[in-house]
Image 1 (cartoon, rainbow, N blue to C red):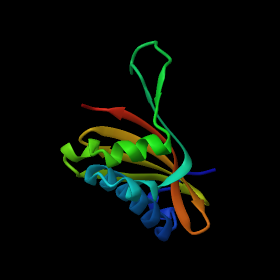
Image 2: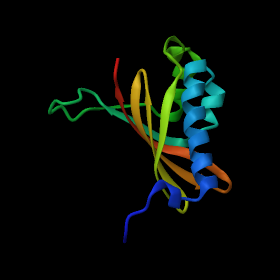
Image 3: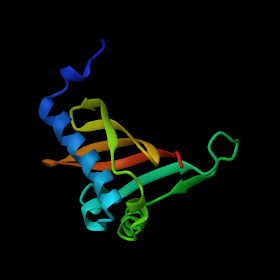
Image 4: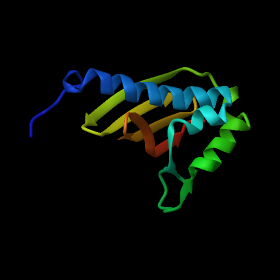
Length: 128
């Protein structure tokens, strides 16, 4: 199958998924729920281990509507809005992105719907 470096991905796809991941985080930091919604698939699965590092198998889940409401309530506005976005892989119409910020490390899975890339899965670890 061979190794692929980031330079082998279509540059326009890398730009597009980077833009969506950045917008997702920036909307959270800005407290803009509708801007957040524009980045998300309606059936988003956003999850975190309830007690990371333990044997507890409970997941904290944030579906799209809950995430949009939390964003609109301003939960993210107290954090430094900087983030580091790394596109890990793009294959045809799917992509994986890692985002590091003050409050989170998050792995995002995106899919292309027509000309739009949307976040369909997110797994995160809270750092604060």
